[in-house]
Length: 538
View 1 (cartoon, rainbow, N blue to C red):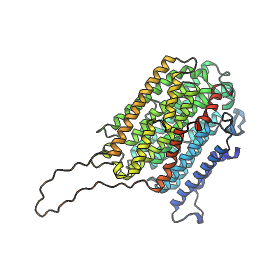
View 2: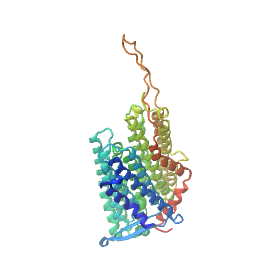
View 3: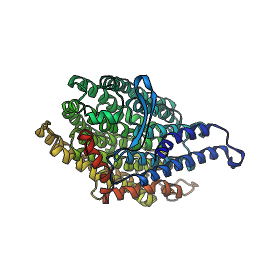
């Protein structure tokens, strides 16, 4: 198990180096580009298999216990260690990362984004996977920061070099710069907070710090640390009003970049709140929790209103941009659950994390497919007189888009319901020391946000899937000798292809499974959350 976890973290890096080397003669096939794309599918597939084996070998009777641990001294002078391990909190995120990266590699094998050589694309995809997996597996604050930063460069190049199918180079480069500048500035502040904790506590070991539960840190140190670390994590989450990089990045990114950005990278911020701030600085977190909850519910309402504005007829809203704004709202529920500091709320936050990764990943896949077929993601274009009307032109694609939309709005029986419900239930009865009237107000606002979410998603389904009846142009008397024009048929869409079914079916199946059987996930997270909030005591 120790070797398996180390392989999961390091394997993609080895694969990235191999992707840049010339393929052996026997593996080149008919095209070097297809060979390197096939290499990406192989490596990410092997990592997914390893993650599934790790999950199957995980002791489900003790999900609160760190398992598959590796603890090796790295920088003795600072007591920085290569410390890896998984528990019920990090295991689902590891599997989700491995799954989404494999599906992105599989999708790219058949539909490579426009841009430079596939070698660089595959290598960057694998480095991104390694950094994300490491973030969820490391148990040292310094290593966490390094892994947290490791994903920035590959995502920057994926947006700047392979993004923007319209070919607007300036737009995608500006979006990439905005992404990296926001996250780097947040990370600098976060590093100061991590160093403050490590130097004051005398260790950077996250397990030891969580067990100490803030007893070795003064209240002032905890307050400063929570403020500094929280700002860095809030940028990556993203929390309103630090979210403005997200819509530009999603709009400019290639389809697989958007899937990984929404499905995996946003989870790194909320994971840091749960793994670092809640157990290590509980007194500081208790002070800032009402403010975090307030920003969270403002984000829920703001994201929903922005989506409604984009969905409105005549607004010229981009469908990818709309889904990006929806992520601001959905991650608001995650932050609200964390801010309650209760097992119910934190479990809801972790469940909503996984559900958002599955559902929004599927949404970005589907919108990318619509954009590739139609040449535009503009809602007015898709809903115009000659628009998409997916139910009639591509019924399977339309049905999948409608399914993903109702899952995203939190329909009971699908994965999106449980996380939001538990987060609001946690706000109904927050942790001791938090103002119950304030959190009841936050719960009511969040509940109103669910209504707004349903409104804009149903508007999108109606406009894109149902479309509009083609308006018949007024007939003019034909001139003498002019050819007779036949009836204009709307352009036909290619419905879902086999490779798309292969890439999207796991997300659909897991969305249904998590919605009908939430105990699969909650049974993993709850004991680990209980132990985390109790200061390392089961």
